[in-house]
Length: 140
Length: 153
Image: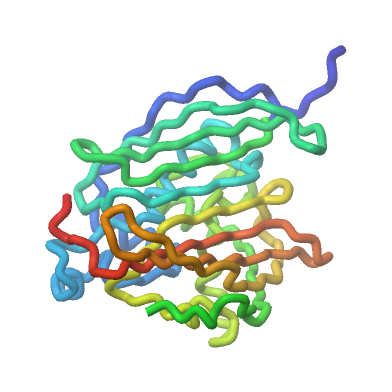
């Protein structure tokens, strides 16, 4: 049986090429902080960060979360996202180059019969470890 | 030091207007050129956009944000996890949402390297003009017993 499908519900590709962001600059942090409303000075104020014992302003975890979301919504559709969760791991720093990747972990029908796809996401620092892990669900 | 009496506290309901320019600003800041945000006059919000609830909470007054009552230490506290749930397509520019936050959970765990970790989770519900629950945000912070080792990485 063939059912009419909207353009948005075309089958999702099984994989998406990784995307690299950066080097992430303090300007990138400031732009994100201004957009988000989180003006925590640790992420842009050199004197404040040093007084708190850090060698430099820290990268802002929610920017890495946003980059993961950018990558995932380019893959599976901005309007299709139904859940997006991120866990912050290793501290990231100005100058970091980060790579966003992800894999399909499950394809299923939800309780309303909607075709769904679950993915796992990783934001990795070049030359370092995992800055953030993510989990997301999209309508296919 | 986390104040466990914050558990269960509800903040006052606050209004959050979803705006096209703010969506574009956020898309630019998260390096997205997705046409869903840039070409649609009524774009959906990016997946982590509802974090901008911070502006609307602040503007509506001190009673909207119960996270302050958790009193997580500025030196030993950090953002551990963040989740957004959408009950249908994400809200679009033009939507006027009614949002309310509550402290849902405060729990203590033993850390792997010794010392206790105190986790706190704030849930925010976003409802549309008809009262339908359209989205939820769950923010989890963690406070360590000692200041984390900053020499790492």
